[in-house]
Image 1 (cartoon, rainbow, N blue to C red):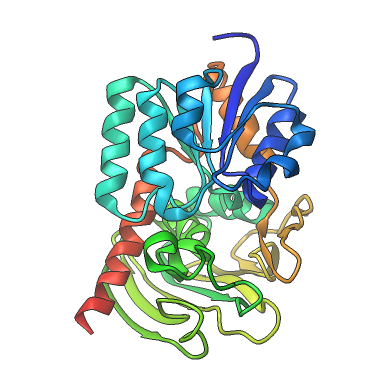
Image 2 (cartoon, one colour):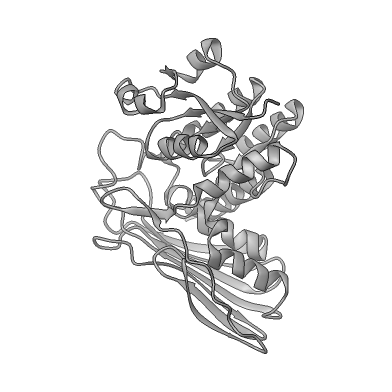
Length: 339
């Protein structure tokens, strides 16, 4: 592999541009192509100074070959484009979710094993200081046995976000609220506590009936396979602006709440024989104008990808973990079909 790791970015929207910028800022990364089906994007990405292609097929046929292809397109395209990238002999960085079904995730993993190429899933919330601290607390069993975990995700996504004619809100391309808005928090839950079972749930659509093909809110309960009970309460029906993303953990030896709008603040920590350290500041949220997304931690992703491909470390979020998040969401959404 050449000294610099070369990248092509598929999808030149907000997140695709962020990927391109992060690659160009890294001293060992080199951006070599941008791809988007919208011709208007060509002018938007001119400053990157790389060739622009109108389809992934056109890029693969005539563009420079990349060590890594970043998939930053609508959710429903992730699986096929990841497969194309792997068949082309490139590693893949895939924005969340890895796919919209477990079966598609399995196809991607099988292809990555066949081609000996890596698939990195973008779950940048793992890099936030509160998340890293929580991982340490749980790994060291500081809370003892876990009794209860409550995750609250209350965001605003209204007509400013769900514009007619776009992929957002479309069942086939978006997949649903848990895939597009809250998969990061399901990833953190799985990363900390493992898989879940005995899932029950209720789903509501308060004010998105004319905006999306799916629910805007849900109340989900479950048990952890490793012990303890949990619930996930979520909504995009919050008026005007995001309210919170929080996780409350009740354990045998203490309690913790990490909150703020993006699970970026430790709001409560009372643990036996433990003094809370001062954590580094969290990155600001990704700002999309009318709304904000998860923390802007993408630079950590590209450090990890480049260091992994140079043999210095291993993938922070591997393809199997990407699959597990999709599988958990798929199992939750299966409850809608039974209702």
